Length: 337
Image (tube, rainbow, N blue to C red; front, side, top):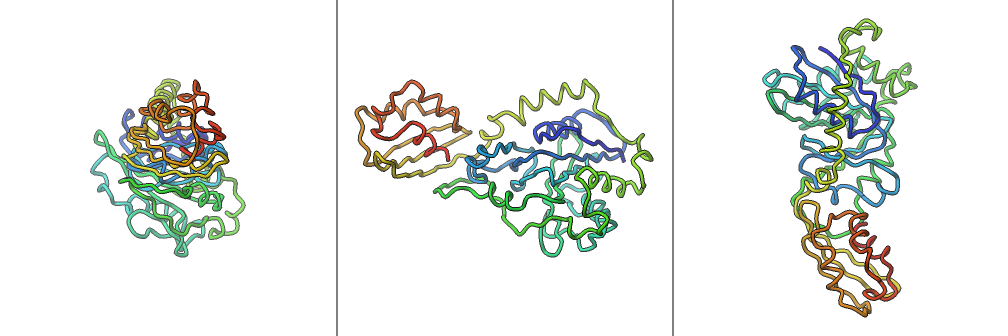
C-alpha cells in the first residue's frame, strides 16, 4: 500500500487531488489518502444544496461548499476532522462493500483504544451507537475509491447549525441527508491519544495502518505530488470542485415558496429552479408598486440562483419603483436565504 498526505486545507483542492489520482496515476498496490480541511460542507452527487444547507449561515461564516462525485449525504468537515480515501483497482473489492474498505480503519481505531468502533447499516461507522464517520464510494476507468470522514474533535454544534436549512417550503427529488446522532472519537480513545493535534491523530492512524512506529519507516511508500500533478489539480478545482455550475447546477429541479412581511407589505415569491437557474418566478403580495413587477421577474429568469447573481441582475433597477418601502437587499435576501 502507498499513501498520500495532502498539504492543502481546501476541500475543493483535496477532492480534486483524489479525482486526479483516481483517473491519472497507475499504482500496482492500493493507495490511501489523508486530508484535513477548513470548515466546509460536501454535498453528495445527487443532492440539492438548497435543501441540505443553511446557505445564508454558510455564507456568513465563510464555510466552503462543494460537491463530490460519489453519492450519499451531505457532511460537514472542519479542522477537527480527518478524511481518508482508499483507491484500488476495480475488482479488488466489490462496489458497495463498505465493510471491507473500512476494516483497516476500524482495526486502527481499536488499537488506539476505541474498541467499540464498528460499521453499522450501509456506510456509517459508529461508536456507542453514535456516528463518527460517513462513507461513500465511486468507480471510474477501472478503478474505485471509497472515502470517509473521521470526527476526532469536530464542532458538533456547527454540524447541526449549517446542515439545518432555514424554514421554508421546498419540494425536490434530491437525496436528503439523514440527521443521526453524531459524536467525536477523541473521548473514546486511550488517554495518550486524546490530546493529539489533528495532524498527530492522522499520523497515528497512518502508522497503525502500516503497523510501524514512525513515518520514517514508510517514507518510501509516500507519493508526493509533482508540480505537474498540482497544475492539473488546479485545473480540476476551476472546472469542477470550485465551479458553482457543478456545485449548485447539479441540484434537481425544485420549487420554493418564500414569504416575508416588510415595512412596505407582504411579498410572497414562488420560484422554480433547475440546474441552478431560476426558470419560473411568480410574485404575490399586498405591497405597492409604481411599475409592473413583471419587469423584475423577467430580469431574473435564467439567472443563477445565487445571491451575487440575483443582485447583479437587479443592479439597474430603481427598486422603490417596484416595491415601495422594500429595499433591494431585503428582496434578494428573501429569495435566497
